[in-house]
Image 1 (cartoon, rainbow, N blue to C red):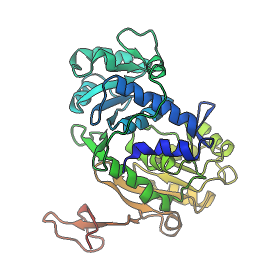
Image 2 (tube, one colour):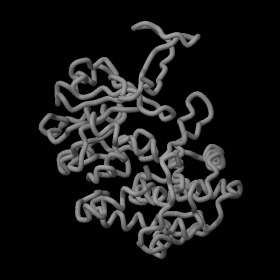
Image 3 (cartoon, rainbow, N blue to C red):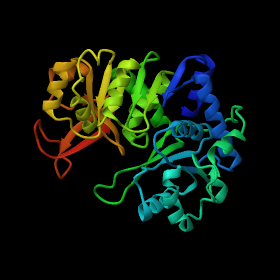
Image 4 (cartoon, rainbow, N blue to C red):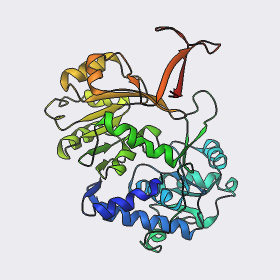
Length: 364
C-alpha cells in the first residue's frame, strides 16, 4: 500500500479530468501529477531519501498539495506544521521530528530565520521558500522545482508499514506529540470512509480548513484515491465557501463545528443553495444538538459527524441516516473496531456507565 502511486495512476487513467481548483485556476490530473513529479525530483536532487523527514510550514495552497504527494512518491515522511507555531515551539517540533528539510512561505520565513541557528540538521540547500524568490538564505521553490524535470521519479521501495507522515497533536494536555501514520494506515482512509461518506470519482470535495489538521485527511485522501475533484481555499471564509458550494456543485466537505456555525449564520444558508451536497462532515469537536436539529430541518440526509483522535484514528461515525434518527449520538463504531467504556481497573462497564473510552481492533 504505497499511496505515492496514486497521482501517477490518476494521471494515466484520467489525464484530462479536472483534479483541483485553487484561486481561480483549474488543474487536470495530468497537470497536477506533472507538478508533483517536479517537486519529487527536486526533493531527490536535494538528497532527500526514503525515510527522511520533510517539514511543511505552509498555509493551504498548491505547493502544500503537491508536496504531500511528492514526499509520498519518494518515500520520505511529511511533517506538516501549523502556520501558527512560533519561536521555541516551532524549533522544538522541527528538532523532535528529525526534519532534514523545510519548506515555508514568505510570511513565515522570518520566524524560521529567528530559530535558524538551532536547526543544524537542515542544510541551506534544503531550506526552501515558496513565494519570495530573492530572499537570502532560502532556496526559491519555483526555480527549485522547475530545474528538477517532470519525469516520474524512480520507485521508492515503500511498503505499507513505512511511515508517511508525522502529525503533531495540539498539546492540550502537555507537550505536542508526534503521531506517525504509515502508508497502510493512510491507504485505509478511503477504503473505510468511501462507504459512509458516499464518495466516488464524481465527487467534488470542498477543502476549506487547514490541510495540516489531521481531520482534513478524511476528505483529502478519498479525493486522491477516487480521482475526484477538489476545490481548495487558502483559508476558511463562510460566504466564499457557501458560494463555492453553489458555483462548483460541491458534493462533499469536512468542517469543524465553528465553521459550520459561521456558515449557518449567513442569511442565504438555505436548502436551495445546498442542494448539490451529498455529505458534509463535522469533526474536531462536538456539534451541539441544536445545530444538528437546525441542519436537519434545512437539508435533511446530508450531515454526518465523526468522533476520533489523531493518535488512534477514527472511532465512530454518525452516518447521514443516523444523524436524522438519533442526532444526539456520535454514531456507531467503524468496521473492524470495538468501543467500550471501562473503569479504573479496566473492567467493562454496562450501558450508560461513566469511565474511560477504550477502542480496540475487532479480534473475533
